[in-house]
Structures are given as structure tokens and as C-alpha cells.
Image (cartoon, rainbow, N blue to C red; front, side):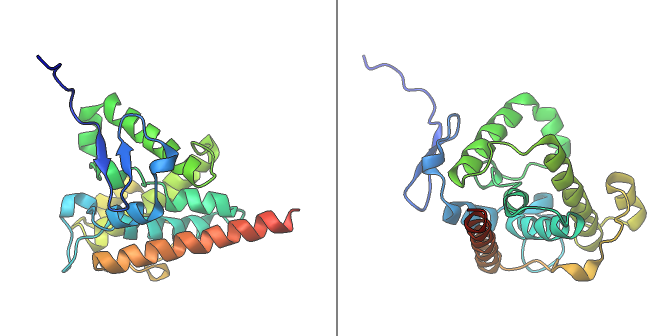
Length: 207
């Protein structure tokens, strides 16, 4: 009798890569797969106004914009980690915060492994430093405030209770109207490539 097979722990990507979810290899990570996936993962469990879901790809673009406004000394590598701060969600989806606390450590373990694989694939440290992580989180929280009030039905007072009141960042600094997935995907890749070009330029000038 053949031995029983364990559950499948990998996912086939549109690029043809086969990503092991429990032990992801940087060699199986492609930016095209990340952009495609994030552009089709809805923030707020899809409970947002508009004709299209508000995607994690669009959220990531907003976070990186806010991060750059708040952190004038950010390096291109810092900017790339801000853009990719939710990259693991191209595989595991965007679980809302209340549910993450219920699921617990297993989710975070998988998320951390995927984060490391993504970062290493693009020549970044496996994880952001504590200081950088806090800066990105601050930008993430500011983005969440605007998303909550503009798209997810929160009153300003309710959003302020959960996310605080943004300072120095205004609504006109970014596009928050939900975009079609193909447009969010295109913009995400374009921004990724623009930051990569900055990284190459900075590396070259340092030699």
C-alpha cells in the first residue's frame, strides 16, 4: 500500500514558479507574481466603497508614498521594503487584524518566512530593522486612517480611535479611489522598477 501523502504545501504561480509555502525559496519569487496577486487581494475584506475592490497593491503604493513623505532620509532600499511591506499577502491573503489575533503564531511564522524570501530575492535584508519597521508601520497606520474614512465606512472619530489622527499627510497626496486590478498591478510594477533603478544608481555612485 502506498504511503499516504501529506497535504500539498506549495502553490503554482502564473510565472510557472512553484512556491513552497512552508519553506519558501527566494528563487521561486517573481515580482510579476507578487504584483498580480496583490492587485487581486482586497483590503478590508472587500468591504469598501467603489466599483472595484481596494487592493493590497494600491494600499502598498499609498504606504510607500506616505513613507517617503515622512522619512526624507529613506534610502531606495528602505523605499522598496515599504512598497513590499505586505508582499507575503500575494500568497496568504490579507487577513484583517482582529482575525490575525485569533489565528495566532502559525500565521505570523509563515508570513515571516515569506517576507524573508521576498526580501532576499531582491537583495534586501531578510527583515527590516526595528526602526525601519516602526517607520513603515507608522505610514501603514496613516494609510489605514484614510482608507477607513474614505472607503470603509468609518467616521473620523472612530478611525482616530483605532489609527490616530494623521499629521502632515493630506488626502491629496495619493489616489485612494479603488483602481481596476490591472491598473493597480501595472502601477505597482512601475513603482517597483523605478525604485530598483534608484538602487542601481545609488550603488553605482558609491563605487
